[in-house]
Amino acid sequence: MGKSTLFNRLSRSRDSLVDDQPGITRDRLYASIIWGGTSLTIIDTGGFEAPDQEPLVNQVRAQVEKAIDEAPRIIFMVDGLQGIMPGDEDIVQILRRSGKRVFLAVNKIDGPEHEHLAFDFYRLGMANVYPLSAAHGYGLKTLMEDIVHELPQLEHEREDSDQIRVAILGRPNVGKSSLINRILGFDRLLVNELPGTTRDSVDNLFNWHGKEYLLIDTAGIRRKARVKEKIEKFSMIKAIKSLDRCHVAVILLDASEGIADQDARICGYAFERGRGIILAVNKWDLLKKAPGKKKALDVAFERQLKFVAFAPRINLSALTGERVKKLFDKIDIVNQQFCQRISTGAVNRALEEMTKTNPPVQKGRGRLKLFYATQTRIKPPTFIVFVNRPEWVHFSYERFMINRLRESFNLNFTPIRLIFKKR
Ligand code: GDP
Image 1 (cartoon, protein in one colour):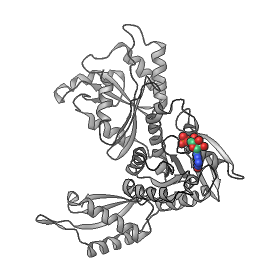
Image 2 (cartoon, rainbow, N blue to C red; image 1 turned 90 degrees about the vertical axis):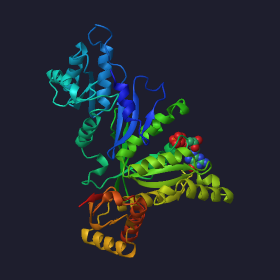
Image 3 (cartoon, rainbow, N blue to C red; image 1 turned 45 degrees about the vertical axis):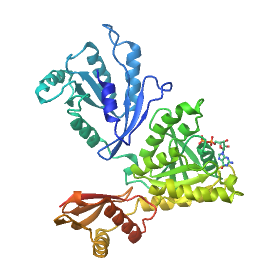
Image 4 (cartoon, rainbow, N blue to C red; image 1 turned 90 degrees about the horizontal axis):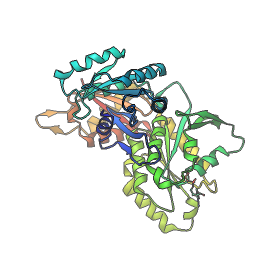
């Protein structure tokens, strides 16, 4: 049919992550991708094909329903060369009852000259029909743009809530569940369990010193894996789902083990997604009497985690409870900066000042001009900068601007995004 081809094409980009470990979800593959700056989790549901001529058997129906349950948006793929198949109408009925947004992808259409093959599929009664070729990529951009465009504002971006959404992330055994238990065990803390985004996930809501916190997907973390190896990648996907919903990512590191590649990777995912980050070095109790190890850790920070240098660091121990409460001071300050608004006047005064002290270098015959900037979003603070030629903005100049904004507006602990637009 081409579902896997589509899945592979979408998940091939550099910063996507595919869970290809068999065993956990034999029938489903997950990948986290970034398309046009938006982070998406895609699921390949394997075969729904009804065996031979039989009608859609119950087992396949159950499969479809499970997959629908997990996803707010669904790409239903049909075969443009074969035309409408007997099972297609059954699936369409189930999809329609689900009330989810469905995009009908008519596959094996390699170019505009074959688009007429897709017309027949309007008979299925779906409004969104996309002729495309999973193998060659034709039509894919249109489909993905529509899907991304339709995404409602992510939970974490909603600006109407004072709730601070926190995800605790880290590789297996760094102490995530210990930390969560420690936090939820605070004196006189009233904790509500709320359903998360999927059937088996749980978030915890509580108030602490007058602020409301949502600890995301605690059940997913505390559920112990029987075979840790096996679920490592799978939990990475879960971690990314949590990242997509959080304001502040507390990334746990293991003081006794130093910084592993996987730690850096998790930081990378949080960074790409523009989340507030706290680097929490757990098991600090084990380092108390090992000054050499502390030094080594500092060096590793500098070498491997430099790209998240804006993230505050805290050394703590989930086991003894040391500095776990202090973690909340860090969360508060990161969140406060993450939600900071700067007036347009102030932004432009800063812009003027930075171009005066360090004008962009001349590029060929032309010169990059920065006209005007304004903050368009919070979570994280995002600024649009109007320029004459966006493609002339060198990344080093962008970095300089970000650093100046940090200094000018006390935004040292939050990621900042700049979008350059042609005026
Ligand atoms: P998870 O897989 O990230 O959820 O990690 P766990 O919370 O299950 O912890 C893994 C192991 O590390 C357990 O044996 C914990 O008791 C231990 N551990 C967790 N936090 C600390 C800590 O702060 N200090 C020490 N010494 N051990 C810890």
